[in-house]
Image (tube, rainbow, N blue to C red; front, side, top):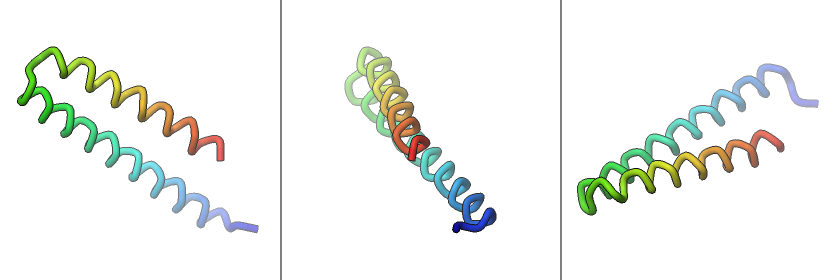
Amino acid sequence: MLSWSFLQISERKFDTIIRHMQSIRRIIAANLQLKFGEKIRKFSFYLAFCNSKKLYREYSSL
């Protein structure tokens, strides 16, 4: 059986990974905005938001 402290550490690491993934998506979206303009920005942020919600649901159900 897994210890409580191990589960807490794992949860914190998972949360950190998710935050980093979201920040990477924002950086990519900002770079696309600079390259292609305002139109691509809204789509990129929407796509990043949808993907992050999907990943969160997949990993939280494990």
